[in-house]
Image (cartoon, rainbow, N blue to C red; front, side, top):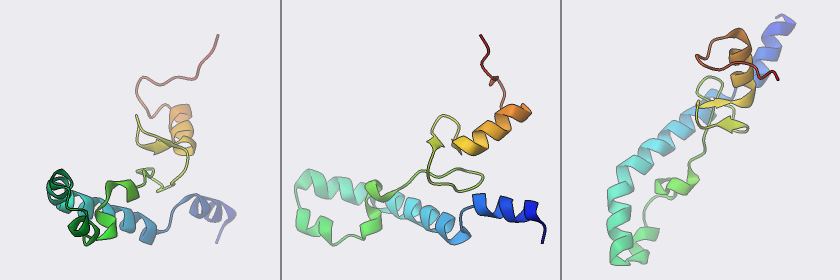
Length: 100
């Protein structure tokens, strides 16, 4: 195993963490209408009986390529590290390094 492989592996999120976020997003989408109806009715007891992961507050933005949870740039859906690498290589259209 080379050093380059090890360094790339460190920057990647575990597949289980990425899968967990996808599962949460599906659960939020599944229960969104029901949550809205219960909130409008003011039925908080029934709202508490829904799964915890049905709440959109529990979603966390992750980089689309590496799954990194921190340093997320919403406009591009990438982490700052991935964004910088891709921008320097010219892989993101319209993004150039600032110079003045």
